[in-house]
Image 1 (cartoon, rainbow, N blue to C red):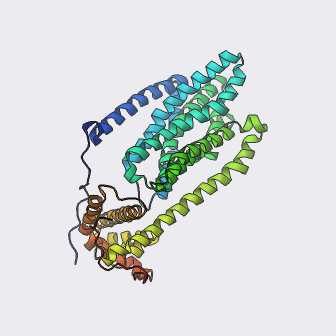
Image 2: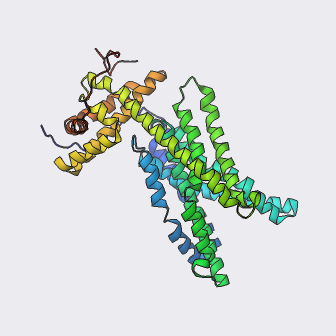
Image 3: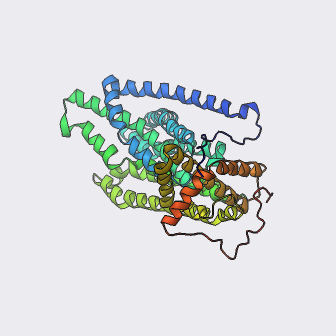
Length: 421
């Protein structure tokens, strides 16, 4: 029987916190810091590029941003992270990380040039050693902050790569404004125009050939944090060592990329691009997709207990463990009852995924003090949407010819989702 579509979920369980740790205080502090960084970095970039160069750089630098953000959002489809985390990561990369990089890189290069009386060597050393260390550390700070303060939504490798991708995309956006705006100013002073201009060459190298360069470097750091998030609490060595190892690998890739021309000659850039960057990009993409499939297998393993207890329709675990069936369920709800129903199904999928991951972590680590409340909260949201999402997901599972039955070797009798593990 059709029932009214519930309102978007608003109820959230949050344990009591001190005022200085409250969500409002954190948001206000973060917004203030990022706003100040934005004002300073934009003023610095505009000063270096000039008003016209700034506008040209801004217009060209924004072009790859939708592609990059959509790609990382697509990877995060199993359990989409909150948009607030992604916006924070992008803003941190674009403003805070870029500000740290432009100040630290300039200071270090000038200091080395003064100390060695070799400006050319200082520029080369700054690009191949200083810049990778400073920039990757600055971008990684966004991942660290989400890992520490939004731990509930940072559950694995995919989350690490997605947060890293948004932080690096924001950083590359600001950096591209600087490079493209400066190139435009050089063209104006020398009278260059068209395809032979410095602007066109810079746009081809940075936007056409290597838009994923910065995200790829920082993805190594995200993988380190993601693997640490997947480690059990007793595996303290992995949780402590893996993030720095990922950061070191990111710095190494960045240094190899920046120093390709000086290390391997005029064609070094293309050699490193073809021999190293493209294979690494393919490897990271495969790893993230494999991790996403692993998340779907977690749903298939954990949700049948809730179906056996009557909280989910019998076919729901099968449908939720397939991205294709999830999409079919949303499409069915949209065709049958409209966009509001499709939104309810999408929310149901998200809550069920969070529930499966919560149960998976409970089986791996000691249960936290808020486990029962969090589980009840998720079950509450699922129950509100059961009459809408259940038939849609069941339809998708039946349309694909897939039916569910609990594995015979797992005893679900008497399962109580409210009990303490």
